Image (cartoon, rainbow, N blue to C red; front, side, top):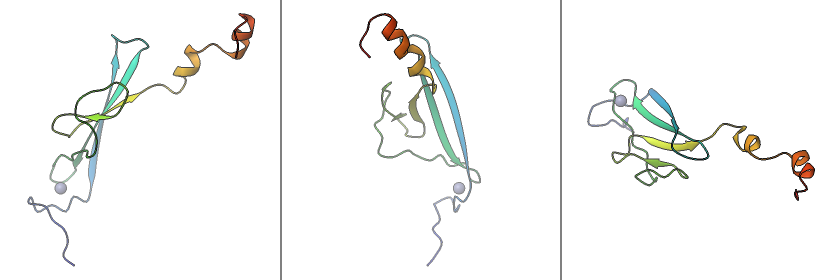
Length: 97
Ligand SMILES: [Zn+2]
């Protein structure tokens, strides 16, 4: 079986990934987004993200129009816990848990 090559003659054996994290200030609660790009480290060809809607939605992963940038909503691990009252606080205020 022959090795698969692209029109550039590169076998795409090694890769680079770039991640940019953006903090969206005009939303409540505060939202964050990771933008991910992947390239072949040798020929610099961009990789497309398939099977993901094009555009931007703060609740689901999407891609840029050229499909080269994957946009993923992210949040800090402690984010939900910090904004939600603890069981002790809910009891103190007479709230059901
Ligand atoms: Zn390549």
